[in-house]
Every structure is written in structure tokens, then in C-alpha cells.
Length: 69
Image 1 (cartoon, rainbow, N blue to C red):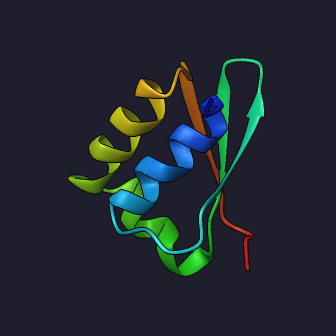
Image 2 (tube, rainbow, N blue to C red):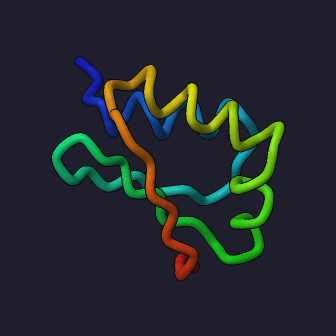
């Protein structure tokens, strides 16, 4: 059985994102992304797809940390 984190990460990979790790904090998905990918995630149309994917996995909110590898 996939966890919410596994589901969110699988959907983000499906969107073509490279290294993105999801960490959970209550109802918040914390996305750890390389700084090179942060701008793309924060801008539409990808932003909307990321929000949809993460919320579909069961998270209410999304935070992006840009200090990943």
C-alpha cells in the first residue's frame, strides 16, 4: 500500500520533475527541490499541476524548500 508521500512523489515524477523529495508535516507536504527546479514549480502551469498532484495524495497544503541537492 502506498503512503501519501509515495503517491505524491510518484505523481511529481510523472510530471517530469527530477529530484523531488516529499516530507510530511501534519497536513503539509514539504517538497525538497533543487534550486534549479524551484522557479518552474512555483510558476503556472506547472504550479497548478504540482498542487493538484500533492493534494490528490491527501495533503491540504504544499511548502517548497529550495535547498535540495
